[in-house]
Image (spheres, rainbow, N blue to C red):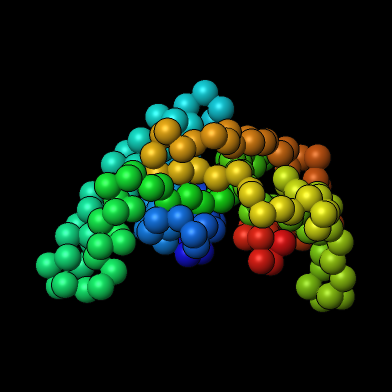
Length: 184
């Protein structure tokens, strides 16, 4: 249920980690990263509107899969029909970043993390400079924030950040690592 996307024209990169216990999380995670890389303008004021077009796409795709399972008489169709009828959501953690000039703008929700590392490939020496959002392993839990495929289930708000690359000038290379909870 993990997806990533890169759009070099928009200088955007995103990852999403669909929650396996939610309903069709892989479709939702893929929609999130693709949408961000095409439309990276997400913030605390517009995130619900930003999610709406992909919530509609998710619903159409899931409905088609439920109908297909029923038509093929696969045993899972009854469970999927019940989950669909009860409007069970897909959920996913998410992080997206966009490089704009000397700034990096980003949005993050849940336990996917951004690591900023300074290093030198020749010497193979690297140093962690900054982490978003979670700082230590004890900060992880079983109930991370997420984006949901239905507005009624969106109980979390993404954190948005901006980093000035002018402050990070160095002779060494700077790496931005987007990671789901498994790597974080």
